[in-house]
Length: 503
Ligand code: HEM
Image (cartoon, rainbow, N blue to C red; front, side, top):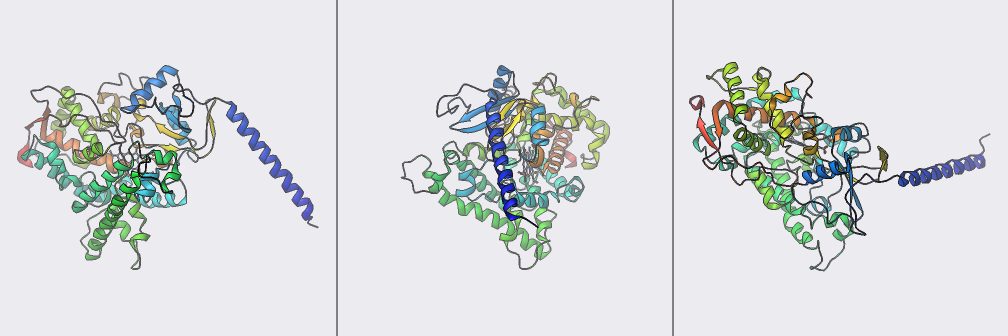
């Protein structure tokens, strides 16, 4: 007969042993050292040694100085681990994906400013998994064909605008119709009136991710208690009162616009329209998980930088233009390829991609030479772990130094040189995938983004010469922040017409 007492005893023994084993494991894990890193001060740790500009360069230097591709810092008790090699990123984010795919919580951004709907910020778990699966189901390479004609139209419109105002690339980009590519296709191809909304959300994100706001991440209860107005972090509650309705309103505006277009039968192909087609009549926007994917996924560090990031050509195009001014031979080679394969009676289109390997290599080199997100988007490890003999505590923030990985001389010879030829050799990696993140969190929009950047690059190369102004080539310097842009206020371009008659 089933003996309950015996069962209870067995259970107690098993639980006790498991608990003991866990304690022993934890204790022995902890006896291992943290990965090397800069010297820590009592209580504040590395608070004062953390770089505030172009952090990726400091992280790479720390890595080289310590001879370790994995670095540990501690900011007031929060552990931050920085991965500086593709190998370490693959080992942790890809092979141990189930524990390295969480996100650190950004209290101000999510809780106060109302951005907790965003897939990129979601904690690892069923809700994130569901949103992500649904979202990326419409962004596979096969799905992209539906968006190609609109993307192509947007590129032609951009080229026409550049032609009519060739010295003012920034204003042209700011023009709403140009904004439809590549950002537009992310949400809806016809989102012109939501560009201002998206800008507002980006501004709110910038306000919510300044260093002072991050204090709320370190001491989360500050967000829920009543604080005197002079207390650090207190003003974020006031800011949030103003920004929250704007942020939430922006999601609803986009949702309502695409939904009414869908009902009227005028919706153009877009992820949003496809998702709305799956809803039944009684669904409300609260049911619509797609709202979680509003195009605000890359908070930056300062309102100024973030606003700039949105006003100018996409950061990848900025890097392309910078590289073309600094490396005229590369530009000439790419243009020769386009001339030979396509001639000058039409513009390149998506069907030409395979026939233009050098232009493809330019795209890859743009993403390698200066990744749009040099430090990726941080992950969080859910349980304590050991890697290469080092202890990584549960809850550590894991930052991939993508810039450092892309400038690793062991992987890329002459890494500082913009050299597309490296992608044409037989043993070259197929793509700088790390530019789009890692493991379960890798960017679901990467195929769309690649195609979109390629079509812009190919269109500009076919149509314009890009050369520095009389002031000389621009400086190769970048802004800090999650999204990194060319630092010069205006990219000094001098574009001569090549084949404008076909536009
Ligand atoms: C040049 C263009 C782009 C770059 C460089 C880029 C890069 C990234 C990176 C580095 C991440 C973080 C991955 C990680 O955590 O390891 C990410 C996440 C994400 N991206 Fe992109 N992205 C781009 C364009 C797009 C586009 C066009 C879309 C939508 C169509 C998109 C949607 C997302 C989403 C939803 C996430 C969050 C994924 C998650 O947390 O599960 N991205 N992206």
